[in-house]
Length: 319
Ligand code: ACO
Image (tube, rainbow, N blue to C red):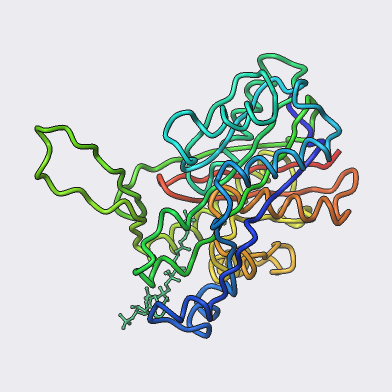
């Protein structure tokens, strides 16, 4: 017994920054950003905390599932980090919802949502009937250097949530990790112990080798989709929707071409949100669910890649 998704929710901060807005203070242009990435605008937490958007997405998902917070048995929060190192974001979401269940954060960068589903799957295998909230949230605007045009233009903030109950919608899931500090990393501030003062602290902003991540991402989408559909016993052509991590339109188009699949099978939403890291897949999942695109038997593949380097993919059959 694994799980079935019974509710989805999402939240975006209300401040929208267009490419033209960024060109006011960065040496960049709408044409460059849109032609290299497909991104036109992103939402940025200005008046909202990370907890605020995580909570809004969670409340929406619980309402969609018609579940009360007190019924939750577990909260898993895939994120690069919330407003505080501790308490974890998951614990603060639990407090604000009025839930009483165990709650923890999980860091697998942009693959975090699929990692979260895999951990949830293990809980269902162990405990049977449960209700689990997986709430993925990232505020990349707080983690990039706004003077670095090569990275700042790529990201945005958002939150996406799902409520899971026991069922058999998950047909296959797999994770990978290849430790690699060079391709993508965000250094952490190192404190002020007197023995370490005077040592240089790297700035706590995202560092990325764009072309290396690009190559890794295209290869990962292709190999993960091939193997996860094989495990699920279906062909790639049998999928109704492929929801990839929304990092860059060109990455997704490159993978579709290599897989000889129509780009129409891939859901592309990078234009309005940029790369929202762990939140990008559940944001799309919620949009399609709310628009009534999922019917009983709809086959959906999720495929993610991110810092670590990590990847995760799964096949879900909508109940
Ligand atoms: N505006 C204008 N020019 C820019 C900008 C910008 N925002 N950023 C870089 N450039 C310049 C560079 O300085 C360079 O100039 P030069 O030729 O004079 O040296 C030129 O544009 C080309 O730079 P490249 O890095 O080669 O551009 P590329 O075509 O590779 O595109 C990009 C860069 C978009 C980052 C691409 O490599 C990419 O998409 N990589 C994947 C990265 C990604 O998606 N990361 C997020 C995913 S990671 C994750 O989700 C965990």
